[in-house]
Image 1 (tube, rainbow, N blue to C red):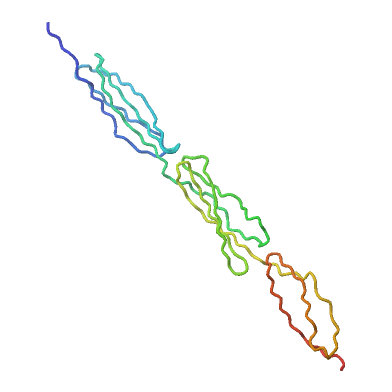
Image 2: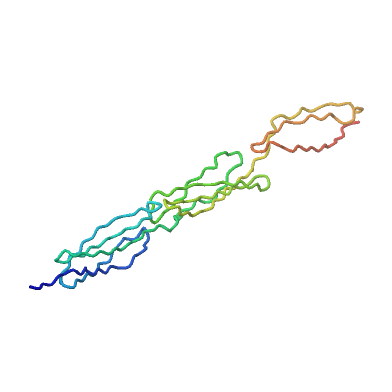
Length: 212
């Protein structure tokens, strides 16, 4: 007696591979399976994950298997590539400030940063001091970096001012000199300043006649 043999594998059609953002929900397509003899084909799948170079970069792979009533099988795979390619966003930037030159505390509040996928963004800062006149400015660059190395920056300016005058801490006492002595001797006062180490001292003499 002659019989029919079902030896032809099933045909499985899956969707194209995708690339999505790490903030999107991965959704695999539903495959279509056909068989030359069996009207109903059993479909099953297995998922696996392949990690990338950072926690938010990875690939999801779904392997579909179609099996007919005679145990013939065929497989097909679909990949969803998940990427984090968006930099953190500064949602609240620290305002520029002005401080006195004698202050050694240049710390300010931290900016507020958000990221689409990473909940623990790393914040760092780099200061460059720029002299301007008698005081200066500090250019503070904030850098926000997520797990995948995406970065964004924000700049804060800190103006350093000197608005306090020098203070005479010791002033020479008055002198009485003979008219033949000519100029009175010079005794320099002692002066201190809250910020400057080199203080310029100048003087002006007023001659006031009294009697002879």
